[in-house]
Amino acid sequence: MSDSAPSRLGESLKGLADSGLATVQTRLELFAVELKEEKLRAGSFLFDTVLAALFIGFGFVFLLAFLTVLFWDSHRLLSLGLATTGLFAAGVWAATRAAARLRAGSRLFASSLAELAQDREALRPKE
Image 1 (tube, one colour):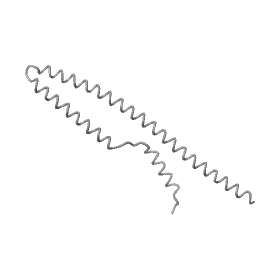
Image 2 (cartoon, rainbow, N blue to C red; image 1 turned 120 degrees about the vertical axis):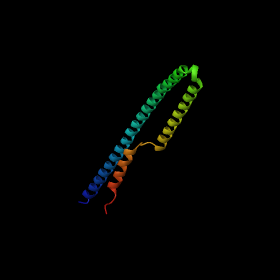
Image 3 (cartoon, rainbow, N blue to C red; image 1 turned 180 degrees about the horizontal axis):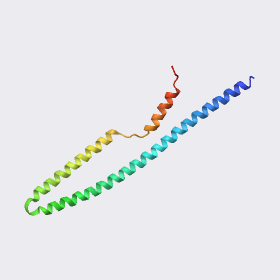
Image 4 (cartoon, rainbow, N blue to C red; image 1 turned 180 degrees about the vertical axis):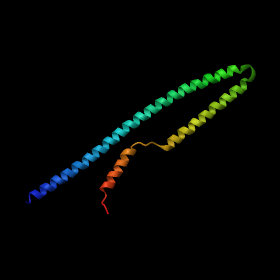
């Protein structure tokens, strides 16, 4: 009888350790998956942003060249001034949006942190 109590206690501790390690492994796998998703999202966002900026930039340049040539004889300085003002305004707008997104931060590991908080709450003693 004395041999069975320590062996049952040992098996119980092994089971508890195994369960704890399985939980840690699951959380680490979740961290890794979230990191991969964030890398893919950031790469996709960067590619789409650069591509959009390139096409929109070329579109604006050609539009402004067209308008300048159209008004060359009568209002060339006005058309160039309006084009310059419009481009500067668009640049300030884009910089403001980029700064706001940078201040907002990333949601990297948000799910993992929420799961860890739930785990801690489940392990707290009930009052």
